[in-house]
Length: 106
View 1 (cartoon, rainbow, N blue to C red):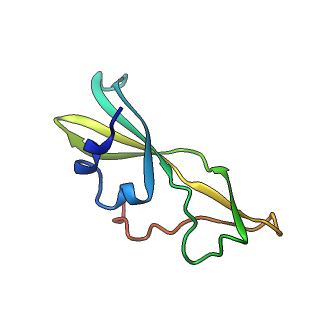
View 2: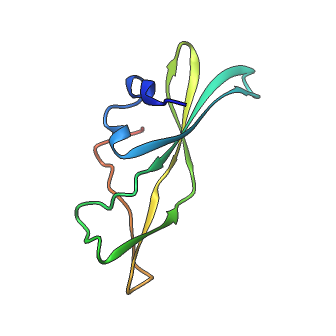
View 3: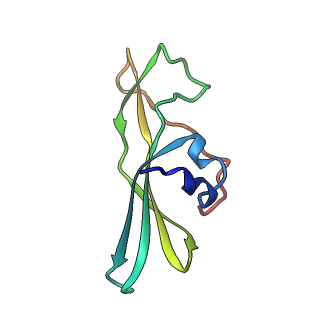
């Protein structure tokens, strides 16, 4: 499925950091209304503040579900997984990308 149409509906800049993994149209059992679920995974790009020779991608943190603005009267939920970066020599050091540019409350 071609997900490029979603760039018109998603927050600006989101798709430069995340790839769309899946899309589903489901029924919310509480409200009995149709909802869109867009699942995004962080791209495999280490933040520029860190050296890619020192860190490696080790999977993802748990998925966060965020409600976005409705599309055509249907609720929209973004399921976002952020990448887990671990130091290659000291396994106890983990880092994650900074998304402070995203609006407060988003």
